[in-house]
Length: 214
Image 1: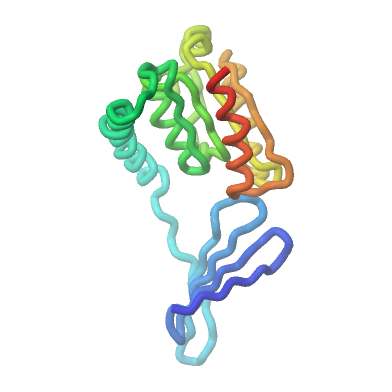
Image 2: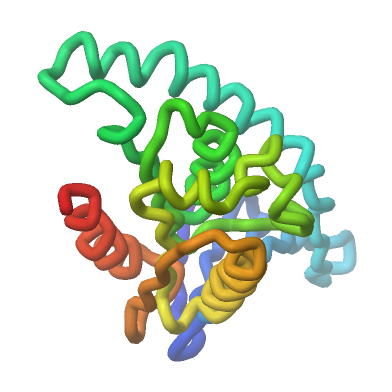
């Protein structure tokens, strides 16, 4: 399989895969920070190229199922393994969970359903979809129902995103607004000049991690 990489503008990239003489897969990453757009190009009998956009996977169903599986890995495998092999302080007040992009959503789904396990949270360009925070007081089994209790338990509740991934900045700000109206404290950091990329998340980690030790 031959791959070609073309930079088509200052803020967009196109990846083209030549899968066969008569089939090409095109993937576009836009500077808006949104997920890549995909299209298959297939040559017909007349030699014309036709674009086919593959149907989207049932995102929320797949995401929920994946988060449930990952939740069990964290609770039953990762945390016990770390505390068995490394000299770490046990207890929720000494434990944080953070993730980037879809991992930010999983951090929210897993962490907020286990406040007995985690005392700090980091959401880096988090993919907060749909009605996850439609009603904060009932979300995540009532994690935010008692804001005073939540604020006293959670040391760091932190959002970060790159200034150029505008959709994720908006998502973070909208989420924080809803949480603030429900009485929940949070913080936000904007990485100047970066997109949905590692530069953003390195800076987020650099800002977030020291807060855990204050």
